[in-house]
Image (cartoon, rainbow, N blue to C red; front, top):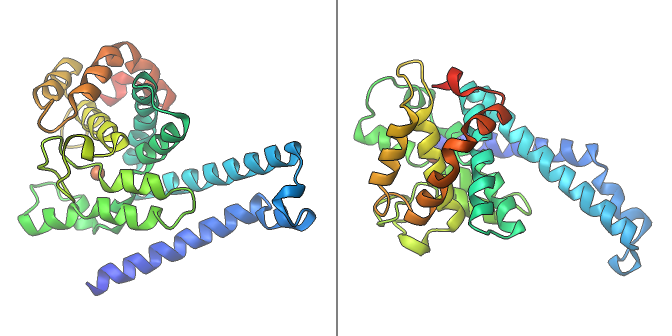
Length: 255
Ligand SMILES: [Fe+2]
């Protein structure tokens, strides 16, 4: 309990430092000095403010992504591939722009809460015992606890909270099912599983594409949303090398 609070406090300090650094970089404090009221802003200035807000948002995402890299280099690459897959599935499903933005954040930072999980559990080469597994499962909650503090990231925080829910209601942390699970979480769940299956780890080789798709299809309707699986499978093979290249890897090096 005490250890968890110490981690949580360090996490909050780190986040605040990142936010302050990003804000000073993009001169956000200066935004209010010329025009005290929003009514006085001309369209050009509004556009500039939107660009600055977007740049700040991207800085925060990049900083957190680098934090993932520091924890485990492979995770950062995995997250970047998920963002690429996520955009493709989201667009194919007709998600609106705001939801696509949340999807990008959730795909990149879905496992940010693992920073709060002890290395002994994260890197344990053998099967986790029930107590360790219970702690590991808290990473989605930890990720939500951090991201929800960022203005504009509240929705993505909820999507991260639910990225391990199962379509049949047997997932965690809330046991949501079907459309109760946010659509972004349902998408991240599918692409996360796929990328984990096809990626090689130091202790095992990645599965062939066909076997990964077979497992996704097999769990469609139980673990995974069937619509998301169908949509993903419809273009995954054709897009695989582009997605891996966009993340700075190649299919052959990862499999
Ligand atoms: Fe996760």
